[in-house]
Amino acid sequence: MISRRALSGLLMTLVGPSSVTGNTLALSHCQGSCANVDLPALGYDTFCRSFFDIAARGKLRAVATGQGIRREMRSLFRERRLYRPSHDEIRILWRGTADGFSVVKVEFDLECGVPVRGCLGIPDGPLKGLILLGHGMASTPERCFDDADKDYMNALGKQLCQDGYVVWCPYIVQIGNQESQNNIAAMLASHSVSAHNVSCASIDAGEIVCRKLTGVSGLNVGVYGASWGALLALHLEAATGQMRPTVISGYMRDERKLLTSSVVSKNLGIELATYIHFANSRARYTGAELAYLLSPCPLFVEIGSRDAANAVELGRDEKFAEMRSVYASSAHPDLIEMDVFDGVHEASGKRARPWLYGHLASPAYQETSRLKNAIAL
Image (cartoon, rainbow, N blue to C red):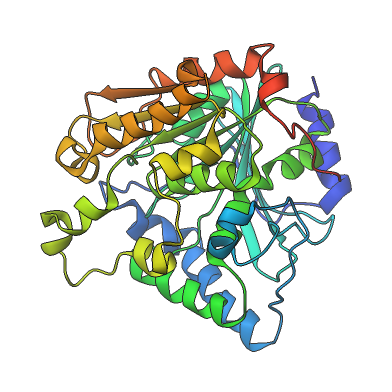
């Protein structure tokens, strides 16, 4: 285990003094509209707009040398590989302490020219493993580590850290709505850069961030995605075939049923990023096609019983049964589970966290995770 003093010294050695320090996360109250509070207060609106300046300066590049992407998913990612962090430098933006863990906010660049911001939560005690956490639309990494005023992520990062796991949560690029995500994705695509690749690569980079900032290697790695982050988690594991134990929260439905439902018809003025990003059926949504790429990746699905976007009427149970059938046909029916908990569209973790920890600690992890710690520094 690395001590807090040693960690502080290591951070200074790598990147110099932080620009902002503090003792708590100190997020403002959101009262159900966290994006409206967090995005300007934490500078994410300016951060997203900076992408257009980067593009105008000719800094975007169609370069990807990270982990290989399966042929079936390449049209979605626009590359044969994920984007890698481009340099060893990781810039410290902020760091502070919380209840039983510390949080370091960092920024680095991907080789395609797009910057990444995110938070690494580090437990005070022994490190049991690393969790790559993908947040959903209109949330922020900081909010995932603070429960003073929770959003639908329910301070999941804090729960995971207090259970002894290092947590990497990057900011999934958008300015609190799907229209902004569409505009950013379109601009990047015009420069041959995939926004979906950027998002998935940002999550996957957590292993490098963890090693750089803690000096610890060899940790077992799990993936946890909520809402839009659940889709990213599914596609990341399907694309790379790493077989890391994965939890998805708030995503299990038949997309065709959703498109003809009142969820869409009552919101005709709202663009849905899902269908613009993944035109021509390039996306591998939940279902048999995706399950064939995932199996035997250990997969746990959690859905709130009152989650309108993933209701029974939208094919929730049918799609899960379809995926489970694929796992069963490959003799792994025990590696996929679903929990419908009492709640809305939100992360729970009540059953998912023990499930995830059990798989990470299991001797079977070494066999199922094909590329464990394969990222070279």
